[in-house]
Length: 129
Image (cartoon, rainbow, N blue to C red; front, side, top):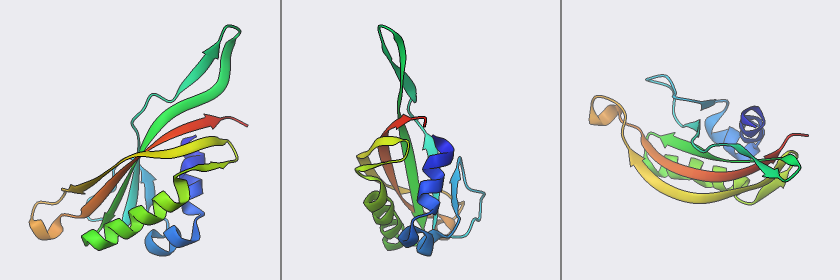
């Protein structure tokens, strides 16, 4: 699911126009160019079960961090991510839904080095094809 989730974001024209290929799982390197997106698997991504065994439908949670040099830039990236993912259902994704959104301001050693950020949490339902 992680490979497909990132590929979905990279293939989106409006988002790519803002962040290019700066969409990565884990933490971006310090001093990375802005704007950028980081992805974290924060949910269990567990498979559902029936009385006959696993049903092949995995459910998890992905945190999408959207960062920019200004709050407006971070908010624009978050808006593009949310427009693409909230309610998305295609390929192996049986449903992707935004369940939480919050602001973030953290990072560098000095105030001028700290990126602005917005965090979006998405509940995902995924079936391997």
